[in-house]
Image (cartoon, rainbow, N blue to C red; front, side):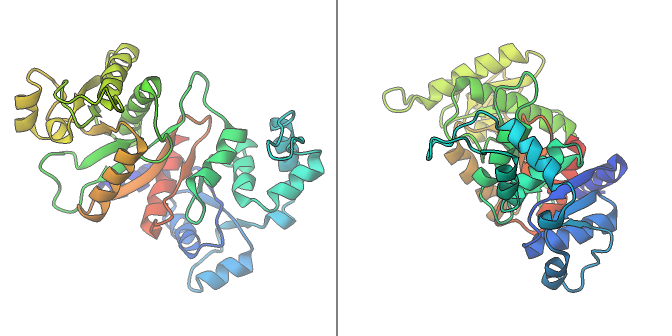
Length: 343
């Protein structure tokens, strides 16, 4: 059984309900039908049933719970939750309260299905939330930050991708699974945030991907071979983040800073970082910033044939995940399965 099928099988057993916010997107509607058909999760799809049915005429949506926010009986309840969550918050553009009253909050959520979906999750009427097929990461995550908020004790919301090797596998990743973080949320994380990203990504690798994490802190330098202190000091950042992460999670197999080849290729790891238990054997890769991470995962995906599942969000109080706007139906199905397993 391949990784995706195993993921789906585990999700089926979990029996969770996931909100899909974008009923206006053909891929999302098709994925909703497929997810319910396979029993991966129960689906709440936001949109108008007749419009969803027109998008994918052959899809069986009979068991998909399609909710039109404009006619939803719980809209007032969700508006009340939003108003309470944002009470006292000021709109920076108008210098007025974000929502003058519950009626204003309701008017806002009837125009913003992403926020509506987040409120369904906040209310406990669903176990997870997936959006982003036709919305930016910022638009998808803003409701999470505003109403779902971070889990207790968590300082950094971050993301990672579970990367699945193409058919035939990869000689450097024997499990066929790698985790890349952070490729979607934190643009230029500081040392503490990089350390948090490393620990969270290792947890995702273990809990969701089912692999024993070996974490490499990446750079253009290996163990001090490079130096950019006069310009950006990314090498120093990754060195310091490595020390912080090792102190926070001493049980974790984590080392750096490494160039990618030193992290993944045994012969290079032995040469450049002799004695490291991670060098040459890493399966979790932590990038110094979003530029490196986003470029890296897309290179693997488009040129290497790896499947990228995510962005998988880490640190929220409840499971909330973003999709790439270039996602396929298969990507959406896989992301829903992951979300179900995060619950």
